[in-house]
Image (cartoon, rainbow, N blue to C red; front, side, top):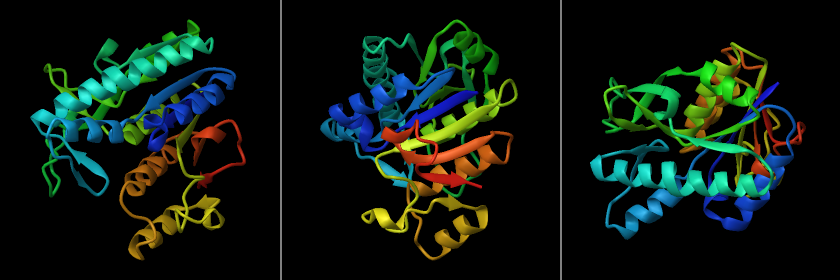
Length: 254
């Protein structure tokens, strides 16, 4: 089983939370791939540089200046911090963006009502490359950046990267996708742990979107979760990043 784990949200920006998550990740046995976000770090740096961050339905609009920021944060600061900390935990991690080894090729998003700028929609994941790294005992740590084959870096939603990687790996070996963040899973009220939705179907999702229960960044997260489970990924779970090893935690996608 290949475990494709995505970590994001407030976990990345809080040093102690990130350290705790990485300890849990390091203890997972077998082949594993880590995809990380870093959107809040990028927003913080952009603000310091006087660059306004714009979001549409939980997705970042990426103009020229924002692309420079996310490339620095995702491909540099966040990625290399995680890789270094994993090395300290005895995990032989290797940091990648989609451009490295032609890992993830994409095209600039078109056909939407809104112009998202330098945002990429994934065309192909180099699953053979990733499996080769796994078979060498390496743990790929992938930043949410793809490339278009024409020399352009593209900002790509980390949940999308995780879903597409899981889908690609599932064509080679049995694969599980876990989307981890700071909450316990999909909840009707993010401030009330008792409102956790333990299982969610596509129809449930549509109903919750319609009545406003599920909004903003949870929408693309669930969109990607359902795409994965419907494309051959054996299991998909959304959970607290600290509980990635607990198969009973979080929300199971059905």
